[in-house]
Amino acid sequence: MYKDKYKNIQSILLLTLLLNWAVALTKFIYGLMTRSASMVADGVHSFGDGASNIIGLVGIWAASKPKDKDHPYGHAKYETMATLGIAVILFMAVFDIIKDAFFRLFRPVSPEVTVFSFVVILGTIVINIFVMHYENKKGRELSSDILICDSLHTKTDILSSLAVLVALLSIKLGFPYLDTIVAILIAFFIAKSGFEIVRDSTDVLCDANVLVHSDVSNIVSKVEGVTSVHSIRTRGRRDDIHVDLHIEIDRKMHVDDAHKLSHKIESLLKKNIDGVTDVIIHIEPTK
Image (cartoon, rainbow, N blue to C red; front, side):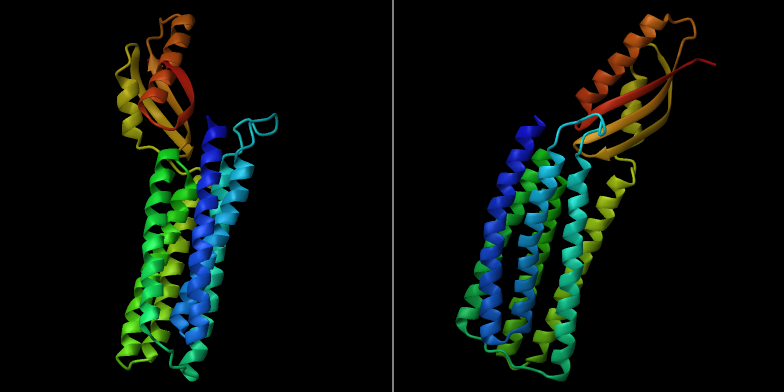
């Protein structure tokens, strides 16, 4: 199952890599030709999309390795770690864009804006909208951090392109300084996306709770023989959730029956909650 999942993710990342770099080259080269800071900044951001796809491919390759003696829980968190690499690329892009915009404030350049400028930016927006929806849909279907994270990255690229569109209109109307201001706004959008990626990734790596405890408790408490549920803990990725909980049972219950009860609870949790792969149940006698 995991092998097929990772193959699907790799295919999606390769497709989006080609689309992202086609968009990036178009915006970057045209931005240099017309001396548009916002267009060049948007092109840099799109190159970041492509670089993030490469990091994603490396992360998926590492995550697809099967469980072994030294890694009994598997290698799935390599995918989550790869998302932090995407965040690093975003923050590097922010630095370059702000640096360039700062120099432009003191040495303003009036970009050349033509009808083709609007055709370029509108065309790349259409492509990015397709990529964003496709990656997000597949990311949720496959419970993939990389694809969902990359769709968020692409969403930021769309916002950036829309900001560039506004800048081009402003320049056409005779306000060239807005080109530099919009480049700084783009940097803000990119930084915001980077912080969101870091926040979500560190939650997984630091074992933050994944499930609402009441969802687990409601399932377990309805099982015949369970008198109490407490100390629920969950961790992991959305496609690899580990559950740890304590239950109380009648102290007179035979150990064989208690063992069967724990297996029943484990099966119910895996059946009713998507992504649960491991359940540890601590059995205690009713006080």
